[in-house]
Length: 94
View 1 (cartoon, rainbow, N blue to C red):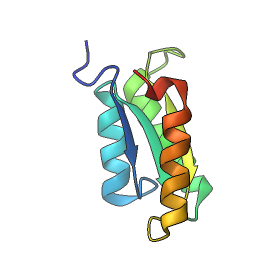
View 2 (view 1 turned 30 degrees about the vertical axis):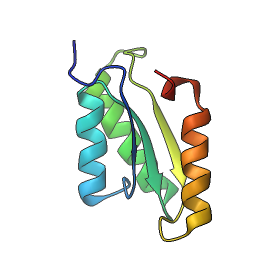
View 3 (view 1 turned 45 degrees about the vertical axis):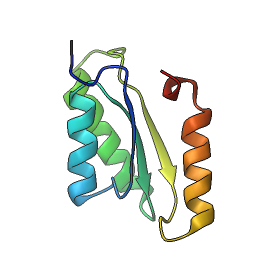
View 4 (view 1 turned 180 degrees about the vertical axis):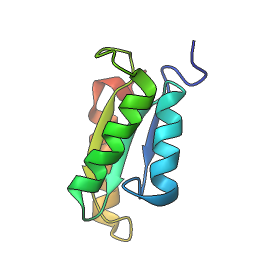
């Protein structure tokens, strides 16, 4: 069993750099991930693809789930919207 199986994380700035590395690592540990990005949907989708590939390999249903969330963490309204979206998702209520 993976160390963070059943846990959930919202990773800000996850479309590149340190945020991307954290999202991938958490997914490989079995954590469900919400990937925040500000501008580039394509970069966020790439992060999601890499994370799920490392976490699940070729298995389509490995128990790790992901969610893409656009938002600017410097804007309070965006932060509130992101958190509410993640909390409303069923998988986040583990």
